[in-house]
Length: 252
Ligand code: BJW
Ligand code: ZN
Image 1 (cartoon, helix red, strand yellow):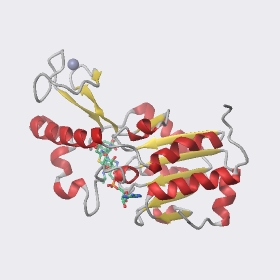
Image 2 (cartoon, rainbow, N blue to C red):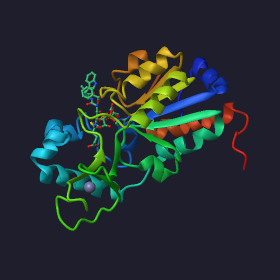
Image 3 (cartoon, rainbow, N blue to C red):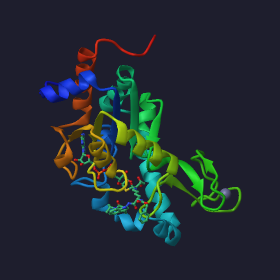
Image 4 (cartoon, helix red, strand yellow):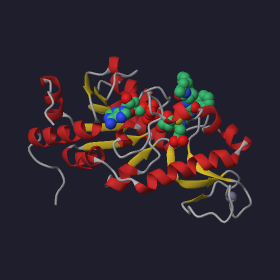
């Protein structure tokens, strides 16, 4: 894909030591995972407060579980796209690289990214509300499923009003506040505290790059906005990184 790179951005790509890529649902859209907001988003058909809160789960575990099983089936069948694969190669070119995602679909790991900071958990894992035990067993003897301890199992994702995993958030904040380039990819930038990472990066002096089909809440704090599909723009950026950074840092 032919995209225009500003001199400022090219210079940043040449000289940056530390890079953060922070992704949202848009990076998985080209794989066939529905996004949340927007014309075809999940929240057009479902109400977040009826499905993505602990109160909703307590009131109606059956319905909440059916929704997650439906989404698990979608995710089970799909594959990472060129955007995920471009991100896998980026750490080779920088002294420090962190990948942060709000996505629960596990596609970054499936593509081959080794160290993924998952802010909102993972839809393919279950957690017991009583003992906190985690499991990735997706076959259930009864539905809604129950833990060995007798407590209710739930998907290990972060619902509205819940705290994010403290270690993941701490790592994400530290990396964002100290990076040279921060890429915000395929997120509407409305859900906190994840959206705040771009502001944190900006305050720390990072060059903020947004990749999104549309302008978002984060566009006005971005130094560069690439309007288009992440599955096309990320591979083009990777090619540019390869050409401006003389060699890969990874010894093979
Ligand atoms: C493409 C593309 C292509 C499409 N290429 N681009 C401060 C102020 C106001 C509110 C709050 C606040 N602090 C906390 C809150 C409350 C709340 C919140 O932020 N609410 C706002 C919505 C108003 N936050 C929380 O509750 C969080 N917890 C928390 O803060 O705890 C502390 C606390 C507790 C209690 C009180 C106060 C503080 C938890 C948030 C959990 C979010 N959970 C979900 C569901 C996860 C489980 C599941 O999957 O079911 O996470 S909601 C949903 O939104 C999901 C996503 O990770 C998240 C973000 O969505 P994302 O990724 O941005 O997707 P979209 O659809 O919004 O955007 C997609 C974008 O891609 C679009 O822009 C497209 O244009 C673009 N696109 N195709 C490039 N091919
Ligand atoms: Zn249990």
